[in-house]
Length: 159
Image 1 (cartoon, rainbow, N blue to C red):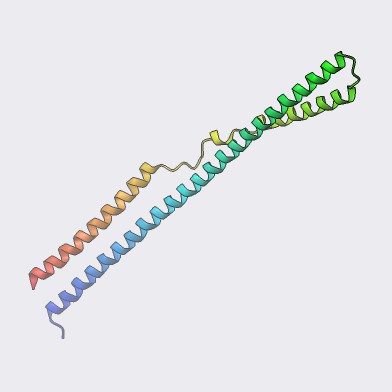
Image 2: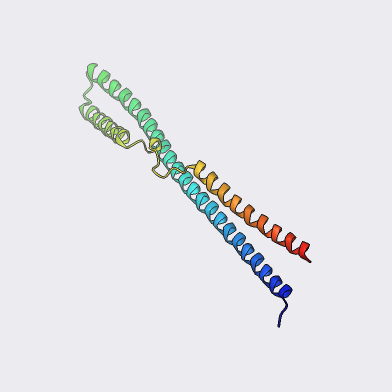
């Protein structure tokens, strides 16, 4: 038959083991929470980068089209000047006008596209909440570890 000291020793070890298991579980929760928030943040950052890239691409394309448009306006001006001087360039003038209309339609389509980069994300991460969750988990872990240390100290004093 085991003595009371031996039983108390086993109970103390079980209590310490249970508290240690609590620390491990809280640590897993802590790590999972941080990883989830980091993943959400990375996804949000990726989405915002893609939005900014799309916006920059449209802006670059619009500027390129504006340069082409000015070039076509100059060609049209030369064609009308030549026509005023007596040249028969109706086909050339009509062709330039069609090209200008095409460029203007393309610019109009680019301008109609929604400015994605300016939209707010519905999934913004509230880092204040994340910090609070982390602080709460850290406090829980600290309390459990303090309890384990106290248990070990009390058992050491008893011996």
